Length: 365
Image 1: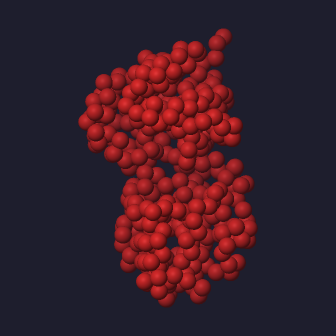
Image 2: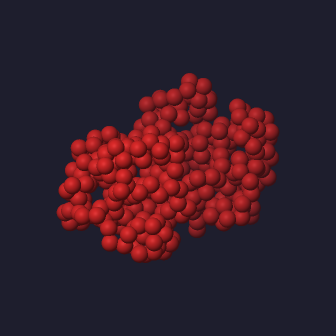
């Protein structure tokens, strides 16, 4: 009896996408299916191959210019690989892999979208409609799903949600202790710390975070610090803002920190200030560390956070300042860890994936 395969097709393995590959590969653990993960761009990497948690990993290693547009060579490469085994399904992440998989094979394709606006272009809507008879789509949050549904007039069960998730046990075991995390980040052992992790870019809106921190500081516990981990084009602007508000000695711009997720116990409160984050993996990382969370009431963040009293409107300095004060001065009793396991764990995703109508229709065919 020949093995049946699921091909997972990723644009690259940089940033979060090696873990994204892991998230989808483990869906098929202890099933009759083997998983082949293919990376369209990016050099072969043993650590990435191991992290992908797949039965086989192939790095096509095309340069970005070689996959611009719809070039024939990547299509032929994917067709050749798919033809070499008995494939039941292709799971393709992002637009380019979705298009290549549809053009290269006659297989059913589930396309996973990780951002807003992927079907803003008329050409992409035309392509999706051309292959709608064997293409189904997933958004990483209800917000992304609804964005797609607003662009494509498809039956709802052809455009569904499968939330991003985390390996709860592995992530918990990897956590540094509070003292180790503080040492690694250069933070004092006894100061209350409000944390933020993200690129220093306008869409992360750390400017509102700094303004709200300055507004709240007189009512925050003595010695409270704001620590922002990340790098980006707004670093100097944010430093100038902190100086102008008189809080430069209380705001720590930590730069890019490798493996920062294991250091979240350094924080007493985590704030996501982003503009329309499609999901917000950092929120799950804060949950793992059992750190209280505040987040903007937009994008996918409300689905993760759940409680309205931990959300604030984008750019609302006054409300965020009030939420900071309440979070650091009043006792909090949240069930984040239970919510994490129930909704955003590998086990929860596997249960949902195999009960989706799109999955049942493909795998039972």
